Image (cartoon, rainbow, N blue to C red):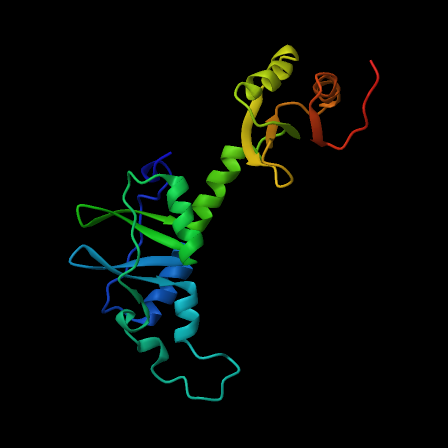
Length: 214
C-alpha cells in the first residue's frame, strides 16, 4: 500500500511569519494537532500541538505571559522535517514514525507539498487492515513454519463458507519452527470452526477453547 492511498490531500498549512495565536486559532478551528510550515510552497518546518504547548507558559507559571502569543511560527517550528513521497510504502513509513518518534509527515513530490500523514491516519489504516472495525471473531492459530500452511488452514474456513476479513502472520516467540496466524472472520460464533481446526491438528491459541468432541 502506498502513502498516496491514505494521506490527506486537504492540508492546512502555516506561514513562518504567522504568530502562535494564528496556530492556536487554526488548530482549534480545524481540530488538528499538526501543520506543515510553507515558504514559497516549500516545506521548511512542522508545528505540532507539543510545540505549541512548549511555546506557551503554563497557566500555573508566575512569569509574565506578555508576547507569548506574538511569537513567530518560525521560532517554535521543528525545522527541516522528515518528509515522505506519495509512492513510499505505508509499512516503511510506519517504521520511520516509530524510529524517529514523530507524529506526522509532510508528503512532498517535486519539492511541493501534496499531502500530509499523521500517526492517527496510520492507526486507522491498521484498524481497517485487521478488520477490527467490522463485526466478527478473532482466531489465533499456531502452525508449522512451512510453505502451503496458510492454504491448509484456509480450507477450514472455506468449508464453513465463512468470509475471512483479514489475515496477519507473526513469528512465534517460543520457536522459529512455528508461526502465528491471526484471522478476523465474519462470524460471531466460531466454535464449529475452532473444533475443525483442532481436528486438523492445528493449535488454536485464541479463543482458548478446550478440545471439543465430535
